Image 1 (cartoon, rainbow, N blue to C red):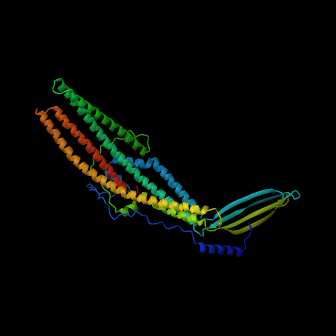
Image 2 (cartoon, rainbow, N blue to C red):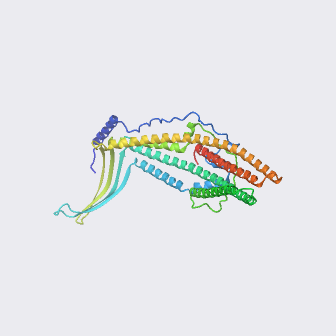
Image 3 (cartoon, one colour):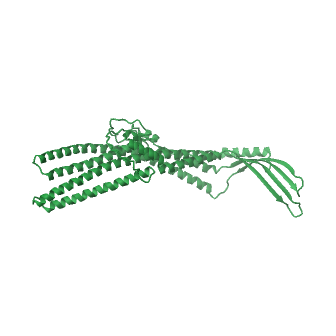
Length: 463
């Protein structure tokens, strides 16, 4: 390696310092303020919660009081394939961060070589061998490597926040599937009871038809309703099988284990999470904060791209031991040590550096747009869940009153039938109306629990 005199080294360093003073160091541009501003309060009031107030955040699903749901969520968090994919991405991001930090450090290599030959035919053959160390270090005067490391670190943080968001989403999907299955099991039982009621009613109508009290039109009408009820029961059974299979996928299984009992769960107490202000919610949500880290990473990479406009300064050092022998004669050993500094500055590149800067500036704008979109989505999640839960609570309350009135009517019709003041057909008609009301109530309760899960998911910060 050529030997560089101290005066030349000092002159090169002074030139680099002057260029840095003239051009300025490559610092990432400050991202513009997002256009989305968090409101001071929610436009939709939080629904009235049950008697229990939730204090859990990382295990919010335990507020529902179902040990079977707790078991399903634990299994999903352990075996879900999507979580394994996200975990692998976190590991990749962390490895890239280590690599970016390593680029800022000096490099030391062990080098060795052996050669045999001659310069021209009259010259004798010679054998040369050398072994030594070589070191190099690129000075990061314009912060390009520091910004690259910072961008990689923000990417890793974004990946970790994405992992948290995926865990929150998974637990909510498992809880929603569990409550859907609970509702479908009950609705299927109601549908089968409605089929049995219609079959009894048809049997009564056939006897009355034979006695000449009703016409065939009544029989046809009841037969049509019976087929509709059977069709509804089949649809509910199919929907139940589909939901169970979807839940199995969330658990990382091909099918639900036979040991799953689907214990009947009838709790009506909804434990609502503590309601945060909109700004606090945005700070809490991992799916929003990951876009903040992505925006920081994009801004840092703009600085990295701009650093290519500035000179690069490389320090090199090498020390090696050389051995030279001619025609098998005695070998001479020498020690060679050298150091140097090199400087490169782009003068003409056809616009490639400027184009790369424009690309990264556009990516930073994209990251800002994604951040604003995530903010809007998070705020909307809360208010939509509030609205759905409030509507479901009102619907459940009204249908509970309707079911109570229907049950009273069914009991009265049965007493009248026993007293001989009413016929069996009327009793069965009232019973069918009660079953329709009960099915509507089950759907409303399912919607209420789905909305409650959505509220917990909206306010969950981590799992």
